[in-house]
Amino acid sequence: MFFRKTFLLSVILIFFCTSCSSGKTVSIVNWNVQTFFDSNNDGIEYTEFLTDKKWGREMYTERLKKLCSVIKKSGADIFVMEELENEKVLHDIYNFLAGEWNFSKVYAWSCFAKTPGTSIGCGVLSRIPLSDLKVHALDIRGSEKQPGLRPLIEVTVCLKNSPFVLFVSHWKSKSGGKEKTEPWRNREEAVLAKCVSKAVSSGKRFVCCGDFNRDINDFLIEDCGTVCLRFFDDVQAVKVYSPWFSDGKLIEPGSYFFKDEWSRIDNFFVDEKSYVKSYEVLTEGPWCYEESKVPVAFRLYNGSGYSDHLPVKLELNWN
Image (cartoon, rainbow, N blue to C red; front, side, top):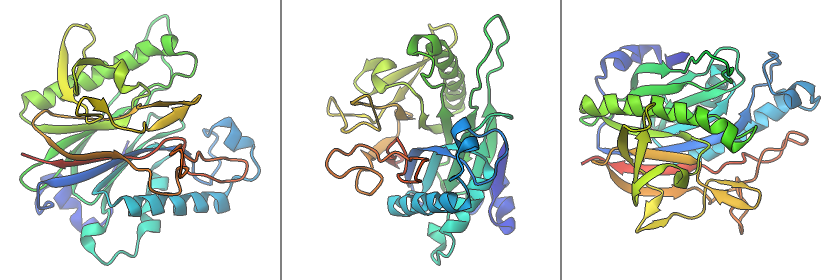
């Protein structure tokens, strides 16, 4: 678990949430940046990185440059990333973004978390002060061995007069088969549902985002846009809103393209009191092919590409 404020002078702001960002509009981008390892060999990287002789500082630096160009182009107040190796990568991203004279555009707050001993975790960069970081993880012991799972990040975003809780998820992939791995995603859904329910009962606004490795249509949808996140008993549920739906239709394209099919596994969920000003898949840039909008995936053998996911951007106006 890692949580830090970039500038030592502002540490007090994190914990007391004073002098927070003004206004009630906030934009958030979520992006699975695809196996973003640093240039050091720590032994926990994926096999292809451990054995590839081309991977090193030069290729890593080029990836940082390309990622930071996307962050700048997005203009987001908060940029959430899945599949970062460690907090050092988050530090390097910040350093590559340095040089901004307009302080309102500086990503001065950040947090990172992953399960010890695993390869990748999730990180958050924010122009708005963050506070009260918590991580939630499953620990299930029985006949079936628990696979390596990413923890759920919970952090408060101190938007002036409208603080809200940000939940960041990266659920179990379908590697090994959809049916075999679905029970683990169900358990991760239950953890998120419990945390969201607690926020609701406390009167807190919230935003959930991440790579859920589950298409929006595979959630329990009560009506167009209203999703029921289920608890462990599969009976109780907490209702959230998915901005993937617009006027009864799904926004095009999806965020992930696999086996010639689009899916929407990179999701946002918000409380039903929030006003979604806009929601879009970011497709105007070199990270996707111009005509098809298919993401330009990162290729280790030559260092080309960006990610096999597309970034998704949400803009909210709090009521």
